[in-house]
Amino acid sequence: MGAYTLFLGATTGVMMTDYFWVRRGYGINISHLFKPRGIYWYNYGCNLESVRGLVCGSCSFHPGMVQGMGVRITNRESLNLYSWNYVLVVAFSGLLYFVFVMISPVPVRTDDEDLGKLYLIDGLDPEVVTGVSKQV
Image 1: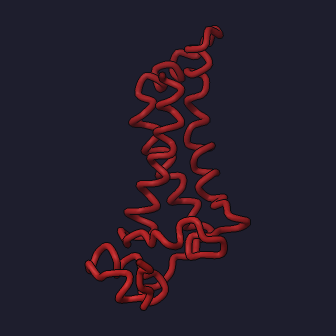
Image 2: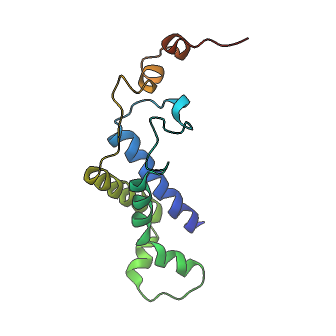
């Protein structure tokens, strides 16, 4: 289970950093989540900065994960680091993702382009805003 929390913590750190600091808490536009070339589309559909944050944030904890699988590791410092793996990997991956985004920014849409803020924060009905009605 330690290896699972290692990768889950890296994912959590990147997601929280993206939501609270990169996008600054804007709502999520549900209609664009799975739309190709939508507002959440990156290079070929993959946000490379998030992948870098996931991998680089969890690399320092891999010796502890390997020790948990039965391989003998002699570096005690890396094993002590692994005992705090979830807390530290959330912080490391989130911090690294923030640094990578500051180096090469991701396209964050403006208020006019991203209707997710209108839907979730302002409480507007998506049907009224976009002019699309339900077919009964």
